[in-house]
Length: 323
Image 1 (cartoon, rainbow, N blue to C red):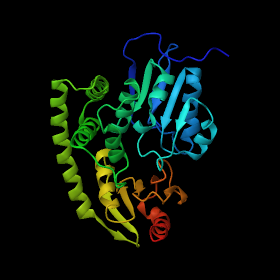
Image 2: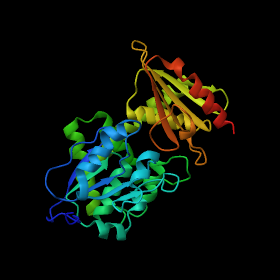
Image 3: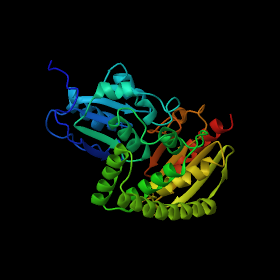
Image 4: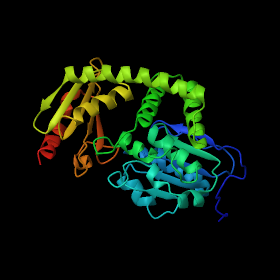
């Protein structure tokens, strides 16, 4: 077996590739530079063997570190003993930056490429690794926990809130090129310890626009949501919503019952989506048949025959929510 690669041969800034979802992994770059994967979940269902496992195999010994907290029973069981993988359940690690210690950073060295989940958690994890295991700012780990695991008692600073809002705006409204450049600039600036003035101004503008969108989504949640079946708050909307709006709807619902549910339905195709989430760390939504993917406190289901198909899932969720 070839000697294990431990770092990039070049001192140049590593390439950063952003991943928006575990089922959409870009191909790894060519060459022999070491690769790190941060806050990227293993794909759910059959997509694990179709997407995640082939990607891991293609990396081989180029993979220096895969750090994640989205528990995946099948995938994690296969790789838990592999020293390249740092896999800690969300119930123990509310965000990934806290897992990157100076010791981990020294072991990884200087990677040639990082695959990073395109959210605050992923970006702060990347910056912390590149800073040798040091937070991008004092309290950045706590900000990541507050944003990635809401309702768990974590405190969010104004700086963390503004950056999270700006990232959401970039994901929702920027062109692909603008989004890539903006997120890369954030990783670079946070690694250096300070955002350039022009980038900070862009963060301010994007955060303001994102806050307006969040308030609009909360109005939709208030109008379309209600308590159902005991233990549930369900928001039913027509049409597939963008990630930021769905996240806002879910957080609104979670704040009003032990389990929050968002159901989106396409009236023409009858295709429907159900997403369930809870702030309760003792509750495992993975125990509910029909719910897949995500963490133990965040699961989803799809239907090609309409939202009526979700009645059984809702009943089972209600039983869990009333315990």
